[in-house]
Image (cartoon, rainbow, N blue to C red; front, side):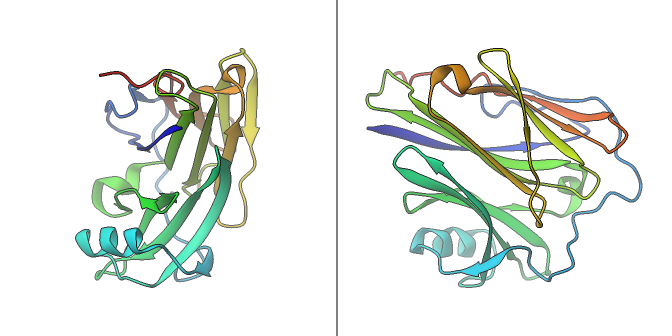
Length: 204
C-alpha cells in the first residue's frame, strides 16, 4: 500500500505552489483577524509518537506538550492535527499519520496572514492507484466556513469544531477534493487552493 503526507499552508497575500496547486487570495484579511484561542494551546492533550518530538526539536517547538485539534480516517490510519508552542510562546501546527510527522507551521510573522493551515494525504493499494484522500486543518478566527470542491462536481462544507479545526475523508476517486476555499461570515472568499495534486499516482 502507498500513502503520502503533504502539508499545505494557504498564504492570503502570496501564491505558492505546494501540492501541485496554487493558493489564490480573493479578499484581504480584516484587521481583527487573529490566530488566538481561549486556551493556551488549542485542542485536547495527547501523547505523541517519537517522530513528533524529533520534528518539534528540529523546529524549536516544546516537546511532549501537544494538543490534538482533530483527527480523520486516512486509508488504514488516521490523519491527526496537533498544536504545540515554541520558545516564543507562538502556536505551532503539525500533523501525524501512521507515526510519521510533518514539519511544523508556527503562526508568527507572515504566517499570521494565512486564513487556513491544512494538511492532506492520499494513497492506494499500489503506487499507480489512489483509492482515498484526506484533508484536515485549522482556520483563523475570521473564517466562518471552509468548503471543498470535489472531483464529481459537488461542493462540501466542512464543519469547524470548537478549536476551529476541520477534516474530510474521501473513500472514492469521485469524492477526492480538487479545491479548498475559506469564507468570511459575510460570504466573501478569503482564499482558494487548488488541490488537483491530490489523487495523482506517484511516479518515478
